[in-house]
Image (cartoon, rainbow, N blue to C red; front, side, top):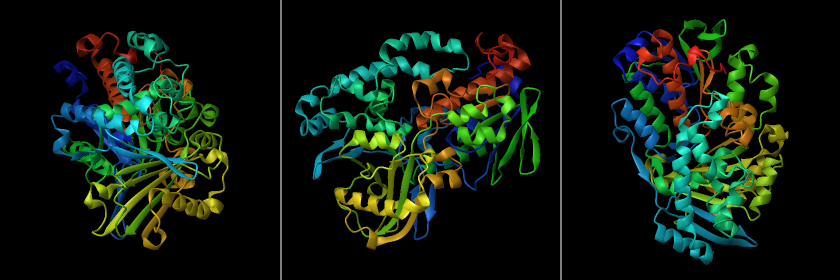
Length: 530
């Protein structure tokens, strides 16, 4: 961020419009307001958070819509600290131990379980129960990934708006540790022979909507982050984090306008200069778009203003999978063995993932279950449970007729839950909501129902992903830009976009030297527009 008083004065009177109050939009609003910029944030829904919000349902149940846990809170804590606040004064985060319960399906039943914990002695003992030889390599895996993250973290923090960023000092230093030709599963084979143990450290690629058999080996750091930095439950649900961010933003002067959608971005020449929202024209020095990239950006930005991402390229973009969701309000208790997070990993996981990737609806799917009441009694009335059930399924490009298959797939999922000891759910359901890929598209504006945004393959990462600085005066935040999907990564992306925007505005007013910026900062004076 800007350090000099001249730099901050250069931003006085500057105005920025943000489209969308998801995690990326809220984080950007905080950072821009901290820099002295007047921020107006438009959100089409009546609540902040986007898919990262918690909703109330009839009967007193509360459900997270999308993300159900908080990982690596240090990035958001740093954003709050830059605003003179402590995250822990705004949100109560409970670290989970065990952080989740993994259940491996085998022939005729359950073939093993791991209660994942950051306590290395206990974790080794858990793994030794199903694969004694693999347990001896756990600490080596963590040591290697600690080094990998150390070298890759500067890459995650830098922008990739110029191709030469691909050969930055940080990128060159990280390359020996990335092994781009390996998949996550192949990289894990260097440590673990048992496929179940490899799954314990690779199923996290589903956070990106990808297969561990295709996802670049870089992403072994996802499981490492969980163990090294913890898995947290925000009390009140993940929406409590978004509400806290919005509350702080309002106190810092951000004008948050709920229930107001943006119709289009305005341009003067090549430069974004405002928006039309709710029938009102609002001029601005820059515009930030926080939304599902392939759905929102083409709708708001004329094709001529996105030369690197014209309509045919957007149509051909490789997308993540989708999810089939059940939000169930249940009367009565849950089995004692059901923890806060439980993942049932399908008997033939490789086939399950291949089917999802190839557009085939799996009939023996993996299932994730959140029982938030295990930790947080405020998510359901006394004697009741709010159960969140997620099944990875193909996105809408597969052409599945969800209207026809929805009832049958619901019954199949309830049957699968019996493997987790949930035998009598149907008679206890007091509230139910289903969101399938069509619901993600229609209710949440997700392109092709691809819940995790653009896929994270090698040719849709770093420089090849939509750039944080999308054009003069136009910026992107959220999972569709660098560094990618997932809450901590989206917050890091917001820091990158906010930094570039501040540098552009201050550089345009003062010039880099007067603004107290690094020599490479004044993007408005040169470099690639998109």
